[in-house]
Amino acid sequence: MTGIVGALIAFAVAVSSGSITADYSVAARDLSYGDRGATVAELNASLATAGFNPDAGDRFGKKTRHAVYAFQKHYNLATTGVFTPFMWDLLARPIELLWRPEADRVEVDLAKQVLYIVEDQEVILIAPISSGNGASYFGEDGHRDVARTPEGQFRFQRRIAGWRESYLGFMWNPYYFRGGYAIHGSLDVPNYPASHGCIRVTMWDMELLLDRFEVGQTVYIYGKRTAVPPAGLKETFPEFI
Image (cartoon, rainbow, N blue to C red; front, top):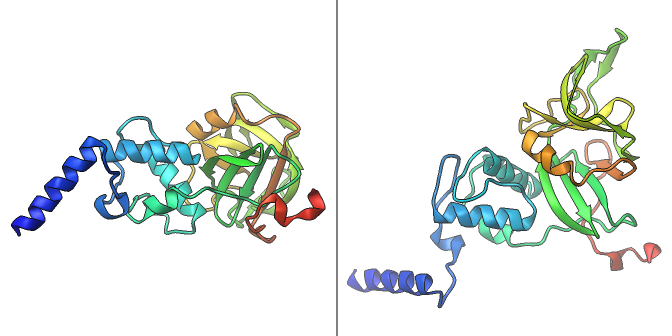
């Protein structure tokens, strides 16, 4: 027992001195909402580096929980909001999407319920979303409609700054990509499709997206009724070279 304790002390000293790097996949505990400390600070820094939008500092707050949601959704993990030790290795991997001719674009995967911002062919931001839930509802004209999010290739057509009240509810800084369908900030972004067809993001993610969105920008939406494109690099698609 003494030998084991001595080895652990030696490991801790080596980590603190910087002579070796801690293996988080072995050493870390589960991290969840409300936690604080150095390991949470490392998680927040790693999430931000990977392209997610967590809290700053050593606090596991709402932003970090939603960033973990997005991370789990991207990797098709259970969306618990709890970051477990084995996830550190996944977090270190680069996130790649299908190479497309538009170097700067927005992509939304309805199957995973995530939004990606791509700049210069690199994924720089990943945010959790909530899209159309597929339920029936009565539209503004009184006709029955289905809450589906359109899929395909679009461009942002227009935007409205600040709050906009529609007959279906409030939208924060909506960017419209097809008719009345928009990507917008919302106070209610659950971990499942819940909208009438728009794409909801959290208020804090929308604040970040405002610096990335622009009218005319290409938007790809897929994954519910259309196939999810495979991940790949430019060399995989010679027709675009």
